[in-house]
Image (tube, rainbow, N blue to C red; front, side):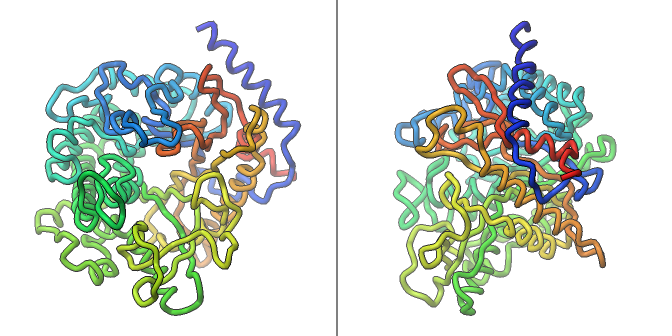
Length: 511
């Protein structure tokens, strides 16, 4: 405990130093958003917790995947990550120092149910999240909980093939029920899945995420069928979501008074040219992304744009499944980072094979005539295009009748060869400009309330609170507001942490 006593003091000293270096100009202010708006930071269990075999936790699919040679760019794993499992109190203090009023995190399914529904509830896992939630509430920070952020118990993959089997619906429902019962008295915001459109495409179409299933031309995997399995996996994800929502609405919501939704990865697509075929390809690229999952959840069937092209390759919902889909979600979580160009592959030759959008008969790229769509970041295909968040929020608002939304992730990647010293990471002016630009556009799309046509967006979460394990890129990319020394686990605030703190404390009002 003695070590913890001085860590906030050091953090405060760094904040003071960076405050003196922070630029004064900004386009957006806290007062541009509703007073009730949630402002927070986001993380996920596998990316920060570590302690991968502590507290009776079992192996997750990502534990197994990252230990396979050649999977991760720097050959790293999440075995230790940010050691958040042992340092969560310090990390809650970081959030408190920023002035955030919410924190989005995910629960490790393998920490709560090491063997899924085939074993006992792990009380040590329950105790860890109990302590985390209580620590957040003690600091006035609202927990915003995602049930699964890519990671599932490996037991379920080995036993029946996870998302390719309808057995997973029972397992996910059981897991959700355990979490609602254990934490729902204090958690008022639940998301069933994080970015299932990413997990399915990369896991069952491209084969770059677990369970690493694919077939040509998308990839060369030991097993899989890229032309069929993504749609079967999606069907089971959608129905697993519906199972959890039904349980929450029927058993818990009236007493616990929380909300439940789902979080989607979103990309805004711009036509490569003004040609009608490219505009149509852009519409298809959009429909084959978020609506692939949200249309059945909101409207009971897959998008007509997908049915027209894929036909019977898309599963049909039975009457009982449609009944289950009748329990509607309360909000849509929007993870948004980038904008890309889309061009036609239905009538036009020369399209690349194996892209995620190939089944939409569209090709996407970040460049047009040799020029990027916006300033590039260290993450491939992630460009700085602030208007993209305004466009994608408007698209979702119109397609889904202005269901409440939360921007559940938005952030900027640092990386590459230009970071020789710690100070290079701490001076992250690019991230400040990114956050300022995107929040400015978000405020605009929310504020259009006359004649009440603004988007019902209720919160915004920066990805991420701290640098962490960035999936296939390991520790080569850094998204954090706080720098992490992975050898010592010391956290240091970057300039962007000061910017966010000043924004939240309304210190920009006079500028």
